[in-house]
Figure 1 (cartoon, rainbow, N blue to C red):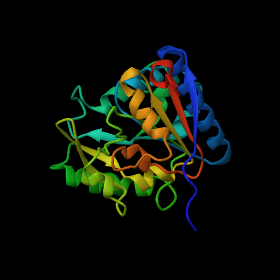
Figure 2: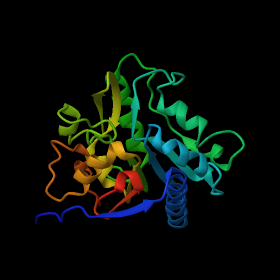
Figure 3: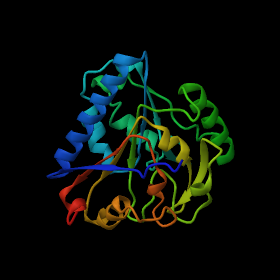
Figure 4: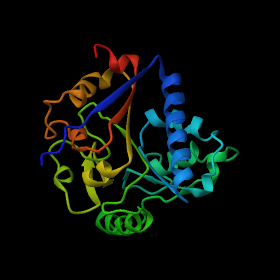
Length: 241
């Protein structure tokens, strides 16, 4: 049987502040629902600048964070103290001291190992043990969208976009090696959310929502969950849609 095409639900926020607030509220609601049904909830988050504002808002949400396991969908292979580290950004936002989110159970990508391949192996073992399902099923998968159509660290024309058997792979983009969840894991989530901000992302967003667009050019199209994908965008990114 041919799988149904991925469907998208677009919600447009008036500005960056509202976008951050709506994103945080959606994630909190989904985690609350998951924790009503299961002992623990599993949340995979995007790196980059756009979600940082949402994580600061999410930090203030009163949830039983000690029952929420948090991982990054991708990470730059740099030390955790490096300014480019997504883990560092997450500790400074979602897990900032003083907010309820500081109690979340964060499981960073082990970038301190001898090489990226070792980090891939270790993180894959960890994700497999953390989340139920094959591939593991996160309750919420928050993803970004690059202006070139990449998501996580699945960049156009790279081997990472072709990986179907591993849960984790090495990605390469913008001059850095990266560790990334693969398309099967991204697609297995109960709810996938794309967070898209700014006029520079407008064309990539149009391509993501285009049923005829091919994943070879826009790897974000590789994310094909069973449930509709929620796309949260600001007015600049969504102009013309």
